[in-house]
Length: 323
Image (cartoon, rainbow, N blue to C red; front, top):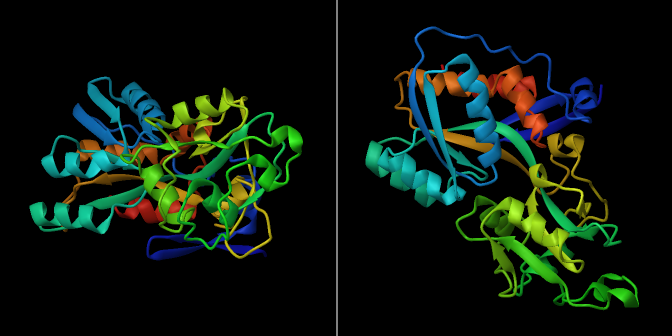
């Protein structure tokens, strides 16, 4: 049986071929448990963090409220960098992030509480390179992506790429490339900088946007534009460009199979961080919300919002963090 490796933090999981066959259409793993309603659940939750997860958090909150009408969940999504301070200050119980916390953020949390926060993976995402729907570009290497978006070219590109004709498009496309990206509060901004620009610097010409949807909207209205945003924000006005990893000529699309296998080079997990003291039970309301998110129903929401659901092998690891 064909097997693929999938890394999650320190854990490495083997994903069977049968599961991957199902995942090609981003179907929810039927091995995931159905959510079971509990009695006596009420109260308020605040979620502060990722814009990428903003819609998902809202849909999960609405689904959870159907089981518990006396629970109120407030969702604020201004960027992953807003999650750690909110968790540290206690103004949020849920800290959605589209990247892992930085060491400085973990250290600040530990300085306050004496232990690190708990990260729960809740979905998978492909950070997509988008172009306008009329753009004929077939694929890009990460070296080319770096040369387009970064002036420092830390990934090894020999020269800056500033026009579409430099990428082999015809004379009609001998036009400057218009660049769209996220602002520095965004986890997507940091993830792209680390993984697509090899930690190099962005060009000053990148038009920084406050949200994932505004990046895609900008590309839809700009024929000569390119940008990056979560796969969950894809619209009919844009195309996703397949990518080659660094040092490789093999091209991978942002498909569920390639994301599960980590062959698509900008595959990532999406997280919800929570404050849980070692050896102490997680707050009941917080726990039940996360159990719902990790359930079959919660992962159906992931698919409906355009992201990739967890497989049971991954979900089992995450549920153990809540015990």
